[in-house]
Amino acid sequence: MEIGFKNHRQNTAVPELDRQRIPHHVAIIMDGNGRWAQKRHLPRIAGHKRGMEVVKEITKAASHLGIKVLTLYAFSTENWKRPDAEVNYLMDLPVKFFSTFVPELIENNVRVNVMGYTDQLPVSTQQAVNDAIAQTAHCTGMVLNFALNYGGRAEIVTGVQQIAREVQAGKVTPDAITEETLSAHLMTASLAPDTDPDVLIRTSGEERISNFLLWQLAYSELVFTDVYWPDYTSEELVQNIVAFQQRHRRFGGLDDGKDEK
Ligand code: V07
Image 1 (tube, helix red, strand yellow):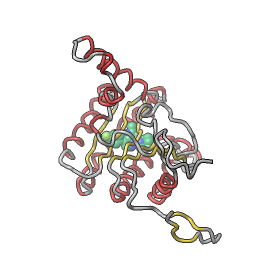
Image 2 (spheres, helix red, strand yellow; image 1 turned 180 degrees about the vertical axis):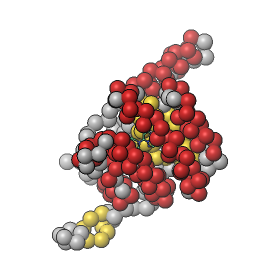
Image 3 (spheres, protein in one colour; image 1 turned 120 degrees about the horizontal axis):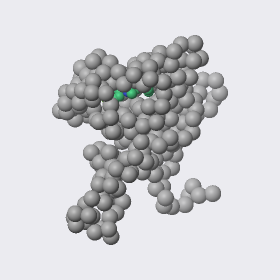
């Protein structure tokens, strides 16, 4: 085990980041924007605005760490239930985000991808997203993958519908359907070979999946932090990756049993 620097308060060793074992795919549920704002007697929108600036910082940090795919849960299919003013503001964030950040994405060789039911978004939002995808299409570094109007169960239903149509057309037999078949019909298929997150991070203290990447998270390590998303930093990201590196992934199997209790 890599023992790094000593903790200043106590003389206990704290583990350091292993740069040889950076997770390929990191997914984040960016929670706590509303609570961050409430605590400061600010409107919820102020939390979202600050949260968008944090997205920019974390994107750059993740790219510098050598992460291959950063998936961010920006808007769920349930978020339409929020007040109209808040939904309208949220729908304008991708526009704001890209109007200021595309040059930096290109400088950092970051390619934008979006997954979700984007056809239901305002046309101006779709336009901003499509422009950013087009303008970064040549970038070969990290993929910044936004989940926008995304829901995990709906994604699986859509994938199953596509497969059923292929069966109906006589292109596949039911027995030939495997886990790989469904994987290939999910919205993460274009991220292959990194379709499944190695680690899911959720901020703001809630310990739930909330209909995010249900299929893809089957073997992911789950890391929860109490920090509200607008207070999240690159140092916290490194800490959360260290926590991931301390875990012992077995993908359901057993290893040599040394760590079995
Ligand atoms: C949103 C800021 C981050 C905290 C979570 C909620 C508020 C960036 C985007 C975005 C999405 C797609 C895209 C480019 C940028 C975004 C929404 C909310 C809806 F292609 N931040 N952010 N989208 N928040």
